[in-house]
Image (cartoon, rainbow, N blue to C red; front, side):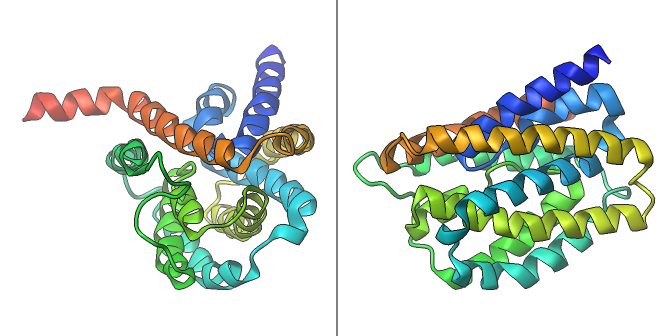
Length: 251
């Protein structure tokens, strides 16, 4: 019971931060959830809880959603998440997590201090192939953090639009993952219980995160998004430090 309370409190704090940084809750919360439900149940639990938090974000930021981007993301998100969930039990995800961690960490080199955007110019249709890859990785390892946020920022949308559009797509992503995990037998009664409890905590946290978000500027939001991506990359690499040490030793 004490562990569950700590996880729910941790989820509340993490999802407030997630609202302010455009995502990444899964990476911060995974270690806590693993303690309570075990490593193998983390991915389906997170799919349920993040799906619920994304629903609340869509409710709060509905009028800011960029439906053009959503249309480009919709089909690739479904296809990618189904394939990723199908391979969830078959592949070791350690190496993929390291690659994603390095990619997130590289965001710091993409940031141009004189601009409010990062990297090359992203167009709407670019989100289709990016969405396919990111949703596949999310289905495979449970979560990839704010991996696409750099693209959203580059596209030029506002902080509210980023959160609304990203969350609308996340609902599709996580519903598809939940159905896929259930089909392959990973959604048990315990997974549903913990997923829903963490989800409720996350929905309350989103409300408070929205109040804070309204008080910060677009530029500051972009800066904390990039900072969160770098922090997520560091965290993902740290989680896999034993695997990295094994790789280095084998060279």
